[in-house]
Length: 368
Image (tube, rainbow, N blue to C red; front, side, top):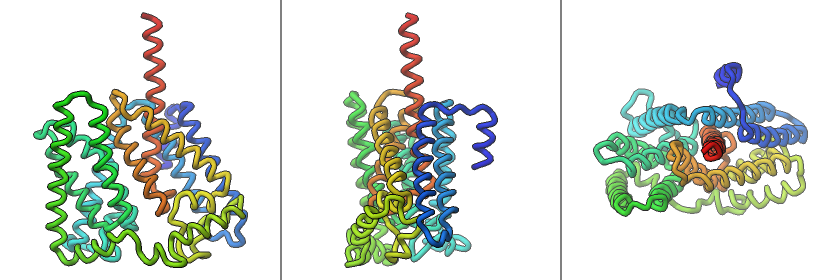
C-alpha cells in the first residue's frame, strides 16, 4: 500500500482542499498520539502503534484523492472489496463448518473469523459489501440481481457465524436504512412498492434461514449466549461499562493521554470505546481532531447522500456503513480497522466530487 501511494503521488495525484483537510485532521490526531507516548515510562509497542495509525490515516487520504480524481474508480474499488469480502466469508463459513483444509485457521473460540485475527473485525468488514448487495437488489430488475442475492446470503451467513454482536447490530442498521433511504429518495410509487415488497420478502427469507440455522445445536448454543444484550464482562463492578467511567475520569486528569495501549494493562481490558480510546491514547488534542473529523464526515455525507449523481450509490452505501461503525464504536475500538479508513476516504472523495460538479455547473450556467 505504501508503494502504491508513493507511485500515485509521483505520477501526479493531486490533493484537493478536502484531501488536505482530511490529512490535517489525521495529522493532528496522530500528533496527539505522539505526545501521549511521552507520558509512558516504558514505550513498549507504542511507537509502532502510532505509526500504524498514521499509515491508516494516509490510506484514507489516498482513497479520497483517488475517488476525487475520477468517480469511475469507485467501481473497481467496490468490486475488489466485494471479492475480498466474499472470499473471506467463504473461508469463515468453510472453517466453521469444518469443510475446508486447516479449518481451525479461520475460526476462533467457536466463531468464524475468515482471514481476520478477530471475529469482531471480520463481521463489521462485511457490512459495506452487504450494503452494496442490498442496493443492487433493490434497484435492479430481479433477473439482473440474482448474483447479488447469492452474495448477500453468503455475507449474511458469515456475519451470523461470526457471532459478533457488533456486526449483528450493524447488519440490522443496514437492513433498515438502505431501503428507507431509497424509499425517501424516490418519488416513483411503483419503485417504492418494489422496495417494500422486496424488503418484506428478504426479511421473511432471513427469518426462515435463521430458524433453520438455530436447529443446529452448535449454532443455537453460541447464538443464544452471544445474543444476550449484557454479559457479566459488560456490567460487572469492573466490567466494560464501569471501565468506561473510570477511563473518563482518568482522561480528565491526563490532557496528553496515558499512552497507546496502556489502558488494557491498567484495567484488565481495552477501552472498547472509540471516544475513550481517542482521549486516552491520543490525548485532548487527538480527541478534538477526531471529533471534528467525525462531525465533518457526518455532515458531508448527510448533505450529499441523496443527490442524483453518478457516484451517489457508492456514497449512500458507504455513509450507512459509516453510521453503523459510529454506533458500534461506543462498545468496541475501531481506530485500527483498515476498512473504516477506506469508508471515510470514499465519503470525503465524494464530497470533493460534488464541489467540482457544482463548480462545473455554475461555469456552464454562466457561459449560457
